[in-house]
Length: 257
Ligand code: PGA
Image 1 (cartoon, rainbow, N blue to C red):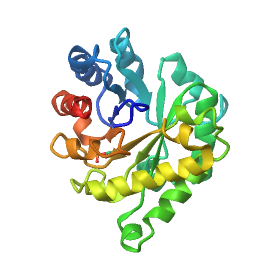
Image 2: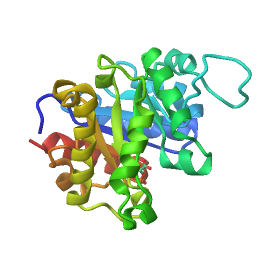
Image 3: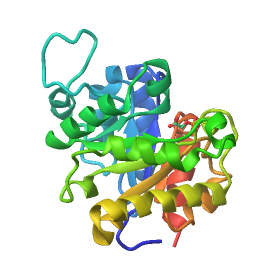
Image 4: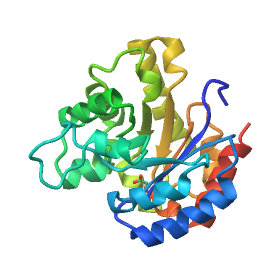
């Protein structure tokens, strides 16, 4: 484990949990993990639960994140939410470029990049997701796809800003499928991502960036993944919807030495 990087476990609730359900879940998380400082813990509820969940998190070490944001500060963008609106609810992270946004909502690399830039400007830490589809992996295009998404997503991000960015490597074929990347497959891509960051930002800066793995991470497979040199935590979908599995993942991250 790198002494420069604290492990991070982030729950991506996706389109699950009402405000009341979210409060109940996060009360259990705060009770069990709200005081520990070994692992950074983030929950990303849907927009409708941000305020109520945020209230439960007050005074605890658990941070609030959103699942998306619009790059403009305000205006005629029906259905959208700005960085300022999220900051007003004390969100400190935002998931950007998730493969579900890329595929179901046609989000392009350049639109995602605008969101990254706007988030950093507004003191919101982006969790930038990258990852290949099964077809791309089978065609041997994994590294090319990841490189394109990473470089386009980070265009214009300065050396002084990169430590505030979190990268999530999420192979699309492993999301919600129960198929997890092998530790070797994951570590290979994570190391590749770090090498690209090193080229762009230098070794010191690149060593500070957290690179999360996402895609069917659960208590059974987490310890091995989290023990890899370049895997600094997890972006958790399914297993973040119940306190027991999510807390087991937090415990797995704090057990890695
Ligand atoms: P999963 O989702 O853990 O349910 O595979 C991860 C994600 O999409 O962030």
